[in-house]
Image 1 (cartoon, rainbow, N blue to C red):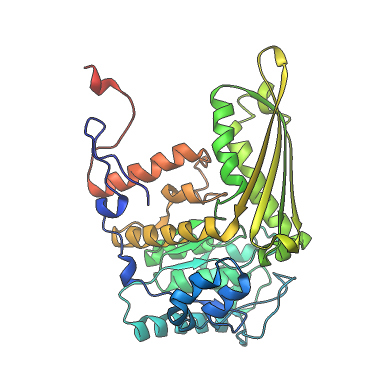
Image 2 (image 1 turned 30 degrees about the vertical axis):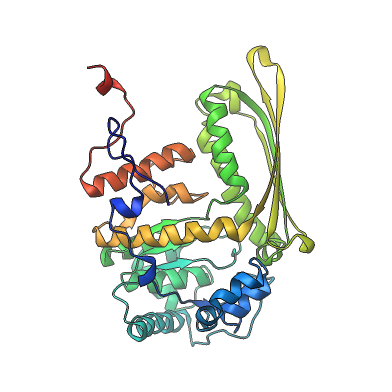
Length: 388
């Protein structure tokens, strides 16, 4: 967990959990839906991310978490299928079943509050449709089982309808559509997303701001990935890959601002590839070749090889997101939580706001929002306080 400087002239940087009232980990109960019937222990063993000797230390706790039947349609995720799936007369019926699950889970476990984070597989690429334009249109679309309403949107609707905070950890279109933002304003739900920033894009949002700060030009950025987990299998479908590709490619345009610096960044050849390679399992490899140029247009290169573990990077920030969304709800914040863009490849933002992708500016936004909630002075890094 990050720390927050209390004051630029004081040597105190408490952990965030000591600075603001985050929920205690001992008070958290986990649950969810899955298209497979395996309990969490069985699913974790199958995934092969953690060693069995580690899993066995929490075997009983994990085995007790059994997935509820999921809302799922292969129209949106073509490379997956499973038996643990809800049936309903239409999408409104499926949403109502999810709402019933949410209420039962809260009652059965004696929870005071709930948070829902969508961590499902990447759905096919979709754009906003007429049913997304207003809440009334969306609810008519649910009744009519409109194909423009994907499974993830049904979860988002159910969560926000119940007033739950909702985060989208995947790249697919979800709660950012006008209809669900309207619902979030009505129910007071904080919402955030999209697509957790864990591997290659995390590195891009570290490197690109440095190049931009020094006005180092970029001719091309070639990115390729290999991974062999279920995420890789899903992304082997061209329609799901298109969703991920759009999410991964957007960050550079926003960071480099080619409309302001055309001589340096206007014609970047930005290529993104993802290859399903089963032997690699959850151990993802991201390789980047970056063609740059400096003074007098002399060419140079950067080459980055990031051998990472997908779930090891993702799990902690899913938990961070849930804790911060819960804090936002208790603090009376609702709608888009742009201060949580630190965690996402495609930060959810108001249409009139230019989205921030620079990781370091995102981190300062997060910390300053926490300081604002605490009533503390914001950190500006102006430096004048040392000399005035």
